[in-house]
Image (cartoon, rainbow, N blue to C red; front, top):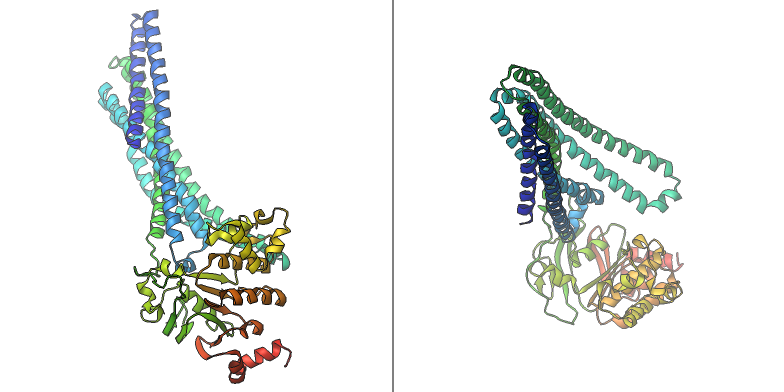
Amino acid sequence: MRLVFGFAALLGVDFLQLLVPGILKRGIDALSNHTVTRAYLLELSLLILLIAAVVALLRFFWRTLIIGFSRLLEKELRERLFVHLVHMDQPFFGRWSTGSLMAHAGNDLSAIQMACGMGMVAAADALVMSTAAVCFMLVIDIRLTLLALLPLPLLALSTKILSKKMHVHFSRVQEKFGQLTEFSRNALVSIRLIKGYCLEGLQEQEFARIGQQYVRSNLRVAVIQGLLHPMAMLTGNVGMVLILYFGGRQVIAGRITLGDFVAFMTYLTMLIWPMMAIGWVANLAQRGLTSLRRIGALLQEQPVLTGGRGIIKSGADVPTIRCKQLHFSYPGRRHPALCNLTLQFTSGVYGITGRAGSGKSTLCRLIARLYPVKKGMLYVDGMDVNQLSIASVRAGISFVGQQVSLFEDSVYKNICFGRPDADQKQVKEAAKAAAIHDYISHLPDGYNSLVGERGVKFSGGQRQRIALARALLSNRPILIIDDGLSALDVATEQQVFEHIYQQYHDRLILLVSHRVNLLARADKIIMLDQGKIVAACAHKQMYAANNLYKIMVDKQQGHA
């Protein structure tokens, strides 16, 4: 309905503008025949002023309604895109860079908004104005009209050729913009590393190189834009020259009146705008269509990770997790990350250790349902995870990784992120359990202190403890700590783990670590190597049976 009223107002503007040349014709003919009076001229002048006032009012309405529609469309697309992205899985984000996704959410949506806003307005306006102007011109003189339209096929041909090239070059512009955005994001996130290695100059050179490629792509688009507008102007001016010469001869010969000639020239002037609009609309349309295809391709992406409709029925009890010949490979990698793992987790503390790349983190990610697994390989409470809803499985798991994710918000909001209804007392208790309460209390704003982007205002160990407090506050039956205590000093680590061990021992805790002091407290230690289980037993038995574990213990305890 918004568009209907908007286009109605736009058509009203076009219709009223087309009346002005007719009014001018009446006045000029009256002046030529010496039959004009002051009252008649005043009447015509007031009529033109009235038309101008109504046009201004209607123009305000169509701009508000139609441009407003394009903004609402942009909003809906942006929200749909965001919802789609937050529901995608880890394999998707492994294929798409953040910079590329930001380019889709920025430049592409803006191009669609322009195409559906001013582009749609210009197209409708050009169609109505050109059709009506040609009709009025035909009424005045058919031969002059055909003569004025003689250069149009040249404009149509050039627009068709240039529009195809516009599509190709604009796609490259968007790709380069994505690369530039991703490089900037990486540089800012890694600014400490860059400064630590004194690589500012190298980063500047690389940024300048990508920026130069982006500029070159934009210049190719600018060349096409630069050709479309002059071609339209040339077409209109050639028609104007032809009418000035041949139409002037018609007036001299008395075949048309001077008023007809002025009205014809006015209509032809109105026709120049649609000719110019052809190039502009073609430019906006190609940009919009290119961006719409890119957004469409992104929205058509479907998560590889899917689940069923089943729900875990264990309630507050700790669910049993069972791996049966669990096998997993990351997309694009030749060697599997996990090979035929068979094991079972119930309540208690399980330590998971092994060399780098042995599959420790992969096992945790699969249990947390971050990656898909084949049927019959992973069970929760006796049900295949592929039959359970993903949300049902994840709702029972708190996850703390080595690479902590903190939002640019207050400490309080970051801790209660997984449990927004928690009160201040519960948040502080979780912080105490994670040994971070005292530090937070000494901050100028306490729990209201901002952590900065990605927690930049805090050290690695402090970020891990905030993330751990968030996980503990969530109070879920399964707690996965994937090397999430690695940045803590030994004393703090022991303090934190002692609390976890005492308060959460009746739950299921999966602890990935190389720290022997932590592993020794686990009820069972699982040693992985090249994706396989090489040993699974308690600390003493593991020390006696596994040489790698024995070396780890001796080195860390100073026996080597």
